Image (tube, rainbow, N blue to C red):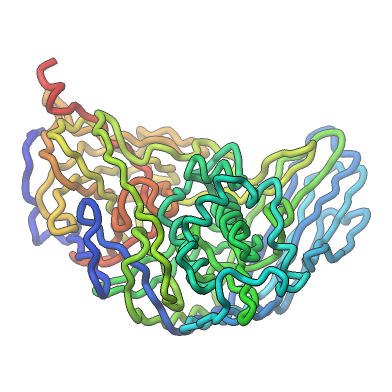
Length: 559
């Protein structure tokens, strides 16, 4: 293999060129990234048939008793969103000893089912059709900041309380909340300032050991529960009622218009948490900081609300042992009408967010981007190998986790690319991608590393040796797939300092998924892209793929 850079032939349809990442205004960020708040207006109408099946693997000796408490979807309407249900049925297998419904202190409908002397696997199958109508418009609240706490109704004021998971009375939480909101004149400004800070500073990670707000603030990472808890802690500390929402996220992609392309929204299918914020003149308004939405999109289905995630999680108890739990969700779209327009772009925060309105926002403290020391091995290194995505245990019982599998099927009609940057010359030895093999007896994979040109992949680069999938052992999870850039005694190619793109290629019957981290955990807001055909890489992805680059820095040569 020649260890030199070469130009990919421009006529090759399989080698694609990335379009520039442009919003209606450009904001020069570190390393040349472009980001902003996208102000969108329009309407979304969805009709989806959903089947949610929860199942328990009963051990060989059986169970004396199993009790399962679970939430069902809610019907509601607020200033931006309407959710209605039809054809709602729940079936149990086998026939339970008892099944009932109750309403908790937050108004949630909770079903309780109990099996006794259970000798076989048990399941709850819930089927329903949900209709979502979302109106993105310029909604303004006239509520001043700070709010008059005495005027907040009793039903809403309970959502100012600190909890074990939402420590709004913590001194550091109070300090940063005050710093974020001290220039705010309206509640809407204060909410925007807090959530902009969360979007810029908290990075997605799973699995993690803790979900509370203080741990999230100190470590700057977490899953959807962490995003919700730290957001609510900062809001409640500022005297703004906020509550957690538990529900489902659906995995079908949808697109947000940007100039010269689309911002592709994608999330794993499964349990999800977000928040609602109370305004005296608007009522409860939904936000999802983990998905960078200052609204709730067409892939959210609301089930419950509460003070924190302990109030919205499904749970179960059993004796003499706790059975394994699994949840499977399928969704068929009868209608998926998304009619959105980009109205304007605003240069705050650093990472993109999407909003239906653009209130004047108090200037949040600037994000400090730490200088990264270049290492001989780097990348978006963390992903959940062989993880149980379905449950955690607490107090002797089981609790549904909101962790879920986030991966992209990358051997279909789309091609995918992930960017990285090096500050010193580097001899590339291997590039590894976190992937799962589904098939590929005759297929193979390889990667191209191409130079960046004007914030897009150019046509000059190097290609790895092919990886035959019949040599990759199947495992029920994700692992590193290693792509070598040296062989037959050759050293790896020398990359000069600069920005590069990893592009995954495939042949024949290769079928794999590539794991990703929601948001921009590794780098910049436009570090991952996809394209369907030709040389048009106009689709920006709302996540970073998990990858690692290994080589030798220039200073190491000759050792």
